[in-house]
Image (tube, rainbow, N blue to C red; front, side):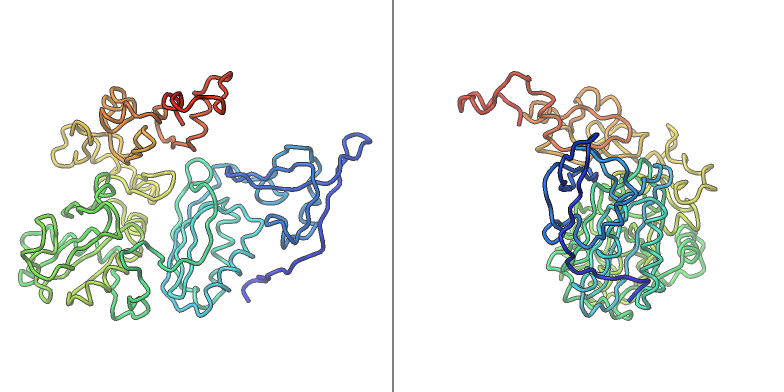
Length: 456
């Protein structure tokens, strides 16, 4: 048992009576809408069948002094949320034997009850993979609790600042058969055998290897070094290590570098085509390291001998080495989408804009997906057409001309969202749909043919 982690049982029914003046307004039921805040309405509820109140004692609520129908409660149960500037984004993963992953999930759920944590935390018998956001107090308390377990005591935890409060809409904490999405799953891979994974390189050693690659007068001419980006193409588009080929991949689960049997079958875009499996040192990197660990076991099974990964991924490298050998920003899978190196290493601010100056030769690598002109804002946007929703880079002119869409065809789509600026992200469709519908319009009374003209 870690740090007093307890899985509570079912308690007696919890009822809360409230008064407005001298009138008793009865008991309340609490519910949690999608925005993460708790609201209450007049009704009776018992802890045995309420997913929100179950496992909580009444004293957790005693500090609340004002309750009324429709009032908002913070997800920290009686504690005020920290200001946005105090929010952190935390990432970690570890491949380790977990004999009873379902029980492990319950213990994590119990500890996180009442803490303001949003994100994705997946557990199975091969380990854990987590990306979440929260106030520093809650975010770091979870890390400390996790490390009290000997299995996770040496886990590498990476922390970066949140921009505007939570970077994730809600908390997903559950058992998942595959910690990352991969065609055919991961259960058959020897992820718990260190010898089957690539050898991890510390950021300083990684930087040294990259400098060797760029030095044409390197004394070790007998060995070839190959830099392999194990991410998606759109991630490369806003930032990558110098010398890395853009991966022709839109989703990690479909990655197939080095998996085809004959060289004739390899597409030209495959960086492992024709590579000597015994004489080539392959340096693999991704955002946080987990995709490299997974894919290196596959390449090892295919006969690749000299595999190396960047320990902790690009985020760990930027924190320790700054942007040396790196160009652009780092794509992240949360609401922030793009982070400059300065977010990980403030001392590197002087180098951050090295790729953004106009006329900077091949360093101005980021291109608009529509017109191929240089893009100076290294941040993707989603197509305003909900039914397309393509993640793409766009210059300001194309954003204006196409009203936030990725192509002319999408501008005529029935479900168009407004153009967003800056770091804004789209919300649920019903918010835009309801804002566009005339208030006097009764959709239920429309004839079938009239539905074709209503945006839904």
